[in-house]
Length: 168
Length: 426
Image 1 (cartoon, one colour):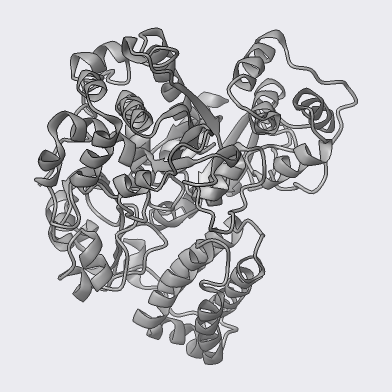
Image 2: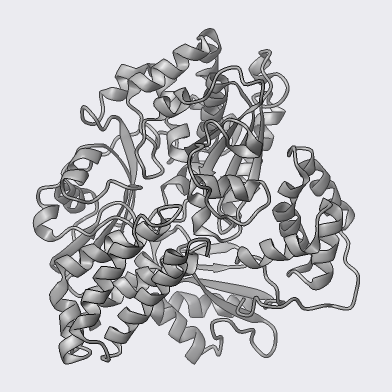
C-alpha cells in the first residue's frame, strides 16, 4: 500500500502459529543459507497476520538469524509486502500496457467515483482497499482485477459492480 | 497455423493433476533420458536449436555448456518464472495448465547439468498459480519423480518454489539469484557469469519456464523433430500471447517464422472494431514498436525482428489501433520502468524519472519541441550505462516511438493537448 517509509507497531508480540511454523521449517531445510528464508518468512507472516508490522520484522529477523534492518530492507524493496493493514478485500487493478489499452481507467474511475475506493487507500469501513499495480500477466484477457489473490479477467464496470455486490 | 507441442495438454481438463497428465504422456521421457549420457542430452538440446524463451534468445544448450567441470561445488538450476514484462503471459499457461511438463523439463535439465537442487522463482503476483504449481510438485514427490531417487534411479532432485514479491527486475537473472539469496533484487556486474559464479557462489543455470517445458518434446522426439518447426536459425515453436486491440486476444502456439500481419489477421481475428492498425509491439513492452509498413514485412523469428531493428523478445505481441495516443502510451511505459528500477544505478534511477517528468510535461501541454530532443538525448545517455538492461528496456522502445511517431509528440509540444478523436468513444 501507499506509505512504505515506516513500520507500524501493533503493540502485541508476533509469532508463527503451529502450521506456519511447520512450513517455515520445511522451507528452511531447502536452502544452504539462512538469509534465503527472509522472503518466505515475510510471506508466511503476511499470510497469517495480513500485513507486516514492526513486531513481525523483529520476529522474522530472530527466526532467520539476521538483523531486523535486513528484513526491513526487503520488506520495503518488495512492494507486495503490506506495511499497513489492507481492507478485508484488497483490490489490485493492473495499470500497465495491455490493461491500459483496454480501458483499465474506467475501472479505477468507477471504484473511486461510485464505490468510494481510491488507490492507496482503505475504505472507512475497512472492507476495501485499492492498489493500482504493474502488469499482472493476464494481458490476453485485459483488463484484469485481482481481489485477495483471485484473478477476474475481461473486466468491465458492469462485471465489477456485480462482483462487489457479492462481496458485500 | 497453430501447433500443439508445448500446448498439447493445455485444453485437457485437469491436466495439472499428475494422473491426468500421465495419461497424456507426462514423464514418459524419463526412460529415454536416463539411458542417455549427460553430455548427449546437452548435445541433443544444442542440436535442437532451442533458444532461451525468456526474451534474450540465447541458445539453451550452449548456455549449459558454459558450466565449468569438476569444481567440487554443487550445480544449481534456477527456473525463471518471474514473467513480469508487460504483455507477457505465456509462462502462466504452462504453470497452470501443464505444470508437469515444467517439472519433467526440470528433471531433464538437472540430469544433464548434474544439478540436485532446483529453485523455481515465481512472481509474487501469481498467487493462485503458485498453489497449482506447488500441488503439482507435491504430487511429483509423492509419485517418486522428485526426491532422493528420481523415477527409481540413483539420482536425487529437490525442487523448491521461491516466491518473488512484486519486483520486475528479478526477472533479470542475477537479480533473481540475489533475491533467492535473501537480498534486494539488484543485478550483479558480469563477469563472472552465473554459470561460473551463480547461486550461493556456485555454478548455476538460469532458464525460462518455456525453455524448460520445451525439453520433454526434444528428448522424446529428437532434435530433428523440433527443428522441423520454425526457420533455420529460429527453431521450434513459441507461445505467443496476443493482446491489445484485436478481436481474439489470447495465447497461441505457433512455429517461429510466420508473417506477423497474417498471424494478427487470421489467428487473432484482426484489429478490433474494424479499425485501422497503427502499430505493433512485437515481443513485450521493451521491444521497439513496428509501424504498419514494417508489420507487413516482418516475420515472427529472431532474425527478421533484428532486421527490422526490434527484438523477438518474449512473444508478447501488442496490437495498437488507430485511436492510440502514442504520447500517453509512452507515459504508461516509462512510469512502469521508473517504478521498477531497482535504484542501484544513477542513470536508471534518476534518468527514467526525468524522462517521466518530461513526457508528463508534454501531456500537460507545458512542453516544448526542445523537450522532445531532450527526451531522445536522455535515451542515448542512459542506455548501456547501467549494470543491467532494465533502463535499455525503457529507452529502446521510447526512442522508437519518438522516431516513428514524432508528429504526435510535436503536436503536444506545439499545440498542447490535441483534440480527442471521435473514435475513442466507439
